[in-house]
Image 1 (cartoon, rainbow, N blue to C red):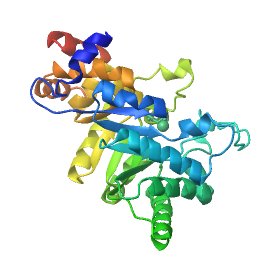
Image 2: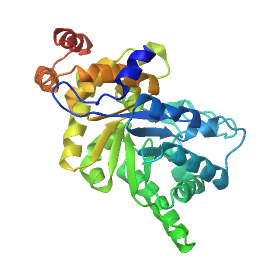
Image 3: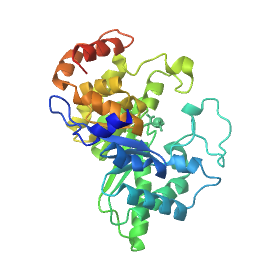
Image 4: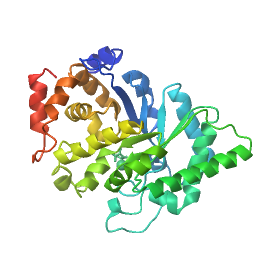
Amino acid sequence: KEQMYAEIRNLPSVTRDGVPISIQLNCGLLIDLPHLTASGAEGVGLYRTEIPFMVRASYPDVTAQTTLYSRIMDEVGHKPIVFRTLDVGGDKMLPYMTGGEEENPALGWRAVRIGLDHPSLLRQQLRALLLAAAGRPLSVMFPMIAEVAEFDGARRLLELELKRLAAQGVEPPSNLRVGTMLEVPSLLWQLPALLPKLDFLSVGSNDLTQYLFAADRGNPRTSTRYDPLSPSMLCVLRRLVDECTRHRVSLSICGEMAGRPLDAMALIGVGFRTLSMSPPSVGPVKTMLRSLDVAALRQYMSGLYTGADHSLRDKLKTFGKDHGV
Ligand code: PEP
Ligand code: MG
């Protein structure tokens, strides 16, 4: 298999009917980054900054964070990378951070909620990112944003750090892009107010599925009960594609869904053109999309969104078989 993927690494990531699809990587450690060259991915669509925090014995200070982010940027070189701010809590606990027991950790004090309640923590991370990115491009993404006010709050902290560093004579990033993850369904109803404020949006389908269906992603009894290839989820995703196109906001998806070939096929059918996935998924997804006729798939899917199906998985499988995908 490795050899097969090595063979397609340098082939264009374009569907059979000529639609370019950008394949990006989800990473969290320095050792993940060599995959960027090995896989032929176009960039890092999701860098999970919490992973290096999780493997340490204590909270890294600004200097330690700056050194790390700088090394990551050096390693990635000219390819784009999106840094997601700390997404801890829920299923990702830091051994040295105690928030007290919670009855529903997935619905609890996590991700940007912690950063907004303890601005100094988020500001330190943003400062480190800005210091590392002096004179080079920087894309920052906030996790678990549930309403526009939270995005505004996080963005304000970024502006404060920008001002602080400017006063110290630190060169700003050559190009600063700010985005958010779409993981919490409430945000779907604020898109007209949210999108004009964003440079990009990335769907976290792991959490979005969990919150859309009220089904714990870590509990096998509930996590497999609902399918991201359900009409309701696909309707949500299609609406996002429409709204982001209207507002000219770049849209991607970085949940695990994007790395499963059949799900990735559906996402392309819905209108996604940027998929971010873990390194082992690149080969299988690229193989799939190079044999896909998007126009035929769109046509096939157009009648499926409003049905009462539990899942469209079987129908999409049949389409794939019938069309040599
Ligand atoms: C997601 O929720 O889909 C996502 C990409 O974030 P994480 O899996 O790190 O929660
Ligand atoms: Mg998430």
